[in-house]
Image 1: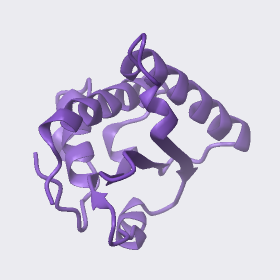
Image 2: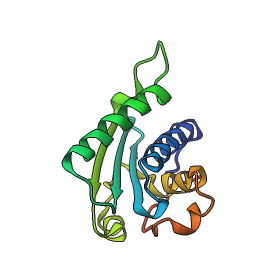
Image 3: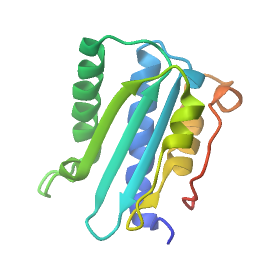
Length: 144
């Protein structure tokens, strides 16, 4: 199953919003990973944002709140049910981003959109060296 082009724009916007936010928080591209799942039947998006920078619980909560608010402003369209109602977001920190990719699992009824999100984060990252410093990608087969 391939990601439909109609939803790709939303995934691009999600990656752009998150890249803008975390770079604004002073993180380098290599300190962040965005993993995601898409369920076409339920139109649910599950996102896991992981950083290798140690963050306090307060910072993690603030990131969660701020990112969802920015997604609401960027993705939701007036007059339509908010798409962000369909977005689940987990924000966490780790010592090993590659391990998080390895542990990321995909249920049978969902599509892994991690590669697509990572590529969009690379493309939209403010730093010119973004692509060379991104964490390695494991698994994932989302069509771009």
